[in-house]
Amino acid sequence: MERIFDSFTEAIQTACMEAFKLINTQNKTIQIISVRWWTDSLTVMWKRINALKRLYQRKRNYEGLRESRKHIYLEEKKNINTKLEKRSSTRGRRNVMWQYL
Image (tube, rainbow, N blue to C red; front, side):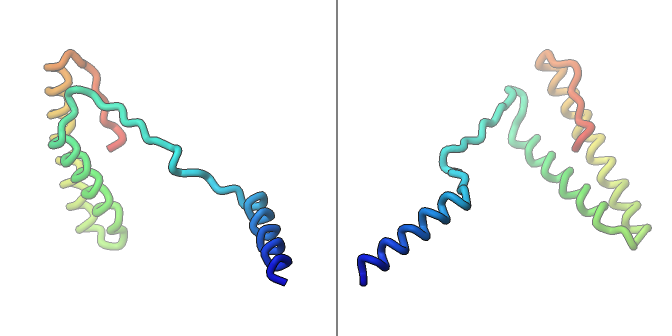
């Protein structure tokens, strides 16, 4: 009886493995391409910009609050763009475009 139960369990497991293909996530690696002029402070600024963007986009019903948050977001985005342009121009890079922040 136990032998029959083990073979039945093995058959079900084999059928499940064939039917439901699992992706082996352990073999995948994320390659990060970094540039010399990118710093941790720029990463913090980038995360702050994204948080401000999410805050202003979340307020759809409160027009006054939405506009004030949008203004803060656009000012911060302008500041980081000027900092990036300065850093990139000092490192020999002329065109840094951050349109998608």
